[in-house]
Length: 392
Image (cartoon, rainbow, N blue to C red; front, side, top):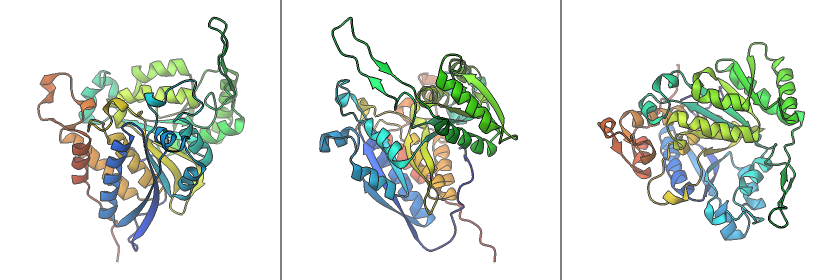
């Protein structure tokens, strides 16, 4: 698993420390996978010698049912007061009425804005034992290790819009895609900073041949890049990038792009790893706590209400999001590495949830089909903490 960059050292052999975490189970499989992630975090914390104090919040569709809104101001405040936020998933067909003024996804927008989370980080790596789960040919997956950075608080999702009205045949609607140079600069700068700890290559993705905001994006990327002479900057149109992600994904190191493009490209990239259920993410800003970078951590998949509560969801994306939480927000790099190693070992030992189960019966030899709970247990059983050496 990829260590995105060095964060606060942590892991010191000091007195017992307790971290405060906000937990948002959300909707659909959200409660299932978040319970799995919490179990792994608790087991890892116990082995590493620190504590976790949880505040559970009712947000998303569950918040609409309970309070009439997707998220309350006091929920945002509780997340702000925590060292980090751990989220399952929000949304579902129950709340999908397009004419409704209250929708579960409003919780995500409010949390991103209220917590100042302007960048979503989605690492994509390929586990050698899961190459067969990807629809791409194995040779195309060799060496894939990329990081997609999606701007989170601007663009179409936050621009002014006009909803359709009137009689059929005469309706019209509009959405605007606004960006300021400051919004672009901060996320592009983060991309360059992270690239320095990787392979020093940034691909800025835009649609500069059509969109005015993309032309601004490209200009700002060039300006920021001038301050990083050791990092190579490439520009790529979003349609070309989508093609290259499946033709030669190993050619990318760090991809940085605007909100909508990042949403689409990161979901496309998930097929490289074999399943949406495999990929973690971190949403971060510039605020630091006493322990690290404040952030919200969640798997990239949706709420999948059709399998909610049936012990079918793949918890790995959520569990690896927990590892990112440990490394980035709590400064517990050893504990994060222990989770990542345990996930890899469970996969190598043949444990597979339904989304990873091979369609070809010939390739199932040596594999064990498991549900959410059993996969979580397999990972917990393989957690081993390497404590720092103390030099006398």
